[in-house]
Amino acid sequence: MRSDLINQYEAGAEKLALAIRGLTREDLLATPIPGTWSIQQIVLHMLDSDLIATDRMKRVVAEDNPTLIGFDESRFATSLFYEEQSAEDAAKIFELNRKMFARVLRKLPEAAFDRQGTHNERGPLRLRELLETYVNHLEHHLKFIVDKREKLGKMMW
Image (cartoon, rainbow, N blue to C red; front, side):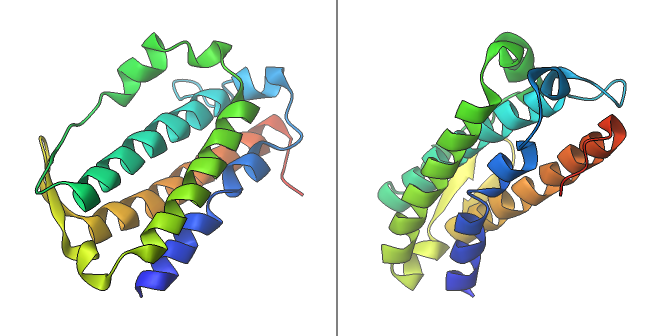
């Protein structure tokens, strides 16, 4: 189970780059579904979220019951110039971050996956739960990217 979960986490590393392959800057910034984020905003959100997730997991591994701080994803999107960033660079960093941290996860003993931190909004979270959350988080947002591509007439191969 643990190795399957780590494999899923690492396999997600390249999915974000594949999901935006062939899109122009105009495509990335388009909002084909009014009132929702653009593909660009989703990609930058995924990077920020994954970097925060990795920090949380590292703290759970290395510290005793660390405090895990939440963040306001909407404020990140509006305050951190998502539309001016490079989606391609974000996808590369996302990929490298996942590949590097998967190496750490594979080295950990089984007991480490029961270590926990306390999220300031959600309470106690074990390393295993954090890992599952971020595997699922990527899949959740990839569906939105696929839907937006379809609405733009830019289906994935």
